Structures are given as structure tokens and as C-alpha cells.
Amino acid sequence: MFDPYKIREDFPILKRKINNHQLIYFDNAATTQKPKQVIEAIKEFYEKNNANVHRAVHTLSLEATELYESAHEEVAKFINAKDINEIIFVRGTTEAINFVAYAWGLRNLKRGDEVLVSLMEHHSNIVPWEILSKIKGFKVKYVDVNADGTLNYEALEKAISQKTKIVSITHVSNITGAINNVKRVAKAAHEHDALVLVDGAQSVPHIPIDVKDLDADFLAFSGHKMLAPTGIGVLYGKRELLEKMEPFHGGGEMIREVSYNPATGRCLISWNDLPWKFEAGTPNISGGIGLMAAIKYLKKLGMENVKAHECALTEYALKRMEECEKVTVYGPDASSRCGLIPFNIEGFNSHDVALFLDSYGIMIRSGFHCAQPLHQKLGLSSSARASFYIYNTKEEIDQFIGALKEIERSL
Amino acid sequence: MSVNVEDYIARIEEACGAEKDFIVLFKYDKKDEVIAKILKKASVEKTVAGIIFDLTFKGFSFRLYGTGKAIFKKINDKEEFYKVLADLLL
Image (cartoon, rainbow over all chains, first blue to last red; front, side, top):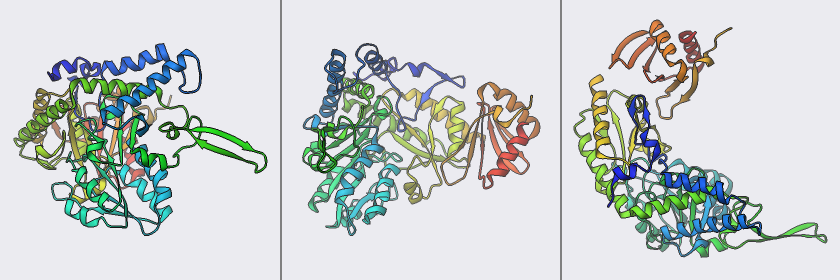
């Protein structure tokens, strides 16, 4: 049974008091807290198995390699990829998107082509394409969103043409929590032979994901938003695409052979097998092991239960926020969003709200949340954002509402 | 020994958003001293629950929190802002 009170016992940080109040952590869309199972897994690796991977024949290296490869296998199963050949460990979602932009885009995009993104994207799914478009001369096209911040599917389907080479779209908005129907997007893109990259930073930690069902060509996500440490993330790619792609980074481990040819004065290089051809240098081994522990933890809870818990919390919070007269909430209704609630309080700017709540030990985010175009579209100078996860409770939401009412009273 | 603004300030964050706000985080071990200094120099426009103060000082409006943080809004002249901070703290 899914029991957030029991889950909380696994998170040492939640016992902290901040500004003389029990910590209430509602900034989960930025990063989540870590359970002791993840902290222990990393500690155990450094205490018992630490060595470099894939490079030595000694016992420790073999143990480290086995753990690191198991982490890839765990991720593959978690998102229903075919096998570990489709799983590349990166630093996070941002690096994963940059990876596709450079390793695929640099060789496949040219003047006259179009890359389709939406106005609800995180800057990490805008900036890499804009930078590359200046080098390659293709056009970045932005699909409009509706007044509630949801994706305008008609506009998207109309915008896709033979010029479109890739549609790079978020699965869940990091502002409104709106869940995009990426299956529908993938279908429309594939009908025009365009690829689909899904930014899963806000979806993979919160809802069950099946890459085969979504039919995404690439899926990018971060470990630290799903209980794992920072600095580890995943790029999933369909094997047939990854096999055709050239490496993103060059260096150790990603090569099979570098042989010097005295006749030409150059080195001949052949690449390692998937997925290692894309993991240059010593990887984040402990991060991968931490990610494996995080996934095992989430699988034990069940992703359907994780989703249901967050939906219930969001629905409850949205309902209770209606009691606050000066609070405006943005985004679709609870049934169409993940556990994210952006809002503003009349007479306060978002940073004021965040600082005020901080006085009560409640941690939320304020500002643009790296999604300025969506704020512009919604006519907002910034927003406050509360985001929930597995260890949050209705009692915490009650305290949050109490603090919001206190802010209103202070006006 | 001379005292500098840096002795009191841990970080200054230029907050994202269209408002051009600056959030000043005072050093935790100095926060009580800082709050006392600021309340002595600035005019209190409003107090909320005894932990949040709306203040004005030399034409700048700002909000000071009992947690040792302050938010200065709509800052267009950074140099002038740093000068006012120094006047408040030194």
C-alpha cells in the first residue's frame, strides 16, 4: 500500500526544521530529496566496489562494471526500452537534448529544414536548437499553446511539414504540469518522416513511461528529479538511430581502436559498441548506481501509485487554493496535469511569496522556472510554483494554504 | 579593523522574472545584527507578524525577512543599489 507517512521515514532531510518550522519541501520539480536507500547505495559503492569501469581486469573494476551496466539495464526496463544499447548515461536532460542536437542535428539538419518546438518548452529544449540553427541555417519553429498553457495540437499538426526534421517537445510542462499527448505528436511527426525527441524531465519521475508505446525516437530525463543524485541523466534513443549517429564526445572508452598510420600521419578510429560509443571518458559511476537504487525504490512503490498520489495531492491543493481570494492559479484542471501548481498572489511578486513561505519552512520556486516564453505567452512577469512528490502529504498542503492565507491577510 | 559590506552578505541573487529584483541573503551568523542595523536606519512602512518588514531607505523600497533575507524590487541602477546596501549596513 502506498503510504506517504511511511515513505517519509526513508528521507532523512524531511526531519529538518527550517526557520523554526518543520521542513515542507514543495520544490520537487527542481529536484527531489533522496531516500536513504539511494544514499546508502552510493556510500556502499565507494566503501566496497569503487574502481573505474570497463578498463581493467581486476576484481574491483569488474564489480564496478557489473554494477554500472546493471544500472543501464534497470533504466531500460523502467522505460520499456529494448535493451541497454538504447540507454546512454548523460549528466541530465539538458545534456541529453544537447547530445541529440549535436550528435544528430549537426549532421542531419541543413538550411531549409525546420525544427519544431513549442512555446511551453524549458529553455534547455530551446537554446540548443537556436544555437545550432545559427551554425546550420535551419529554422526553429514555435508551436503555440492555449490560454490554459496546454499544447495546441491543431497548430502543431498544421506546422509539421516535409521541412520538419525533428519535433522536440516536453512530455509535461515544468510550469503548468500539463501533460502532452506525445503519442499523438509522434504519430503526426512520423507521418512526415520527422523524428520526435521527448523531454521527459517532468514525466519520467511521475508517471509510468513506455517508450515503445509513446513511439518516441529519443527520450531525455534527469536522475535528480526522481530521487537519484545530481549529475546523472539518461538519453534513450531507438537503436537503429543511435547506430547511425556519430559520437557526441570523443575520448576514452567510446573507441574500439585508435591506430596511427605512419603513411598518412593520422589516426584511424573505430567506435565502441552501443551504448558505450556515446559515453566518453570515465562516466558518473556512482551516479548511475544511485539512479539504479532510485528506480528500484520507485518500482517498489509502483509508478501508477506515484501518479495517483500526486494527482490526489494536486486536486486537493487546487481545491483548497480556491479558498484564497487573491491567489490565481495557472494551467489546466487536475485531471490533465502532473503535481505542479504555478500561481501568483495579487499584490505580491513571486519571489516575495517564496521568501514569505520560506519563513514558514515551506520551500517553493519563484521566477521564470527556465520557461520565459510560456510566461510571456501567459502574460506573466513571473510565477510561484509548488510541486509535489511521493513524500508530500495533505497536512503539508493544509499548512501551505494557511501560509498563503497569512500572506493575503498581510496585504 | 575595518568592516565591509561583504562581512554581512553571503550572496546577492539577481532573481529571474521581468521585475529586476535582487534578493540579498545575509550571513546567517550576522543576521540579527544586520536586521537590527537596518531597522535602525530604514523607515518601517509595515510589519507582518513581527518577522517581515516593509521598509524604505533613500528612495528604495524593500522587504526584510526575519530569516535574514531581503528583496529589493525593480532595481535599474545596480551601482546605486550597492551604494544603498553599504549605507544600510556600515
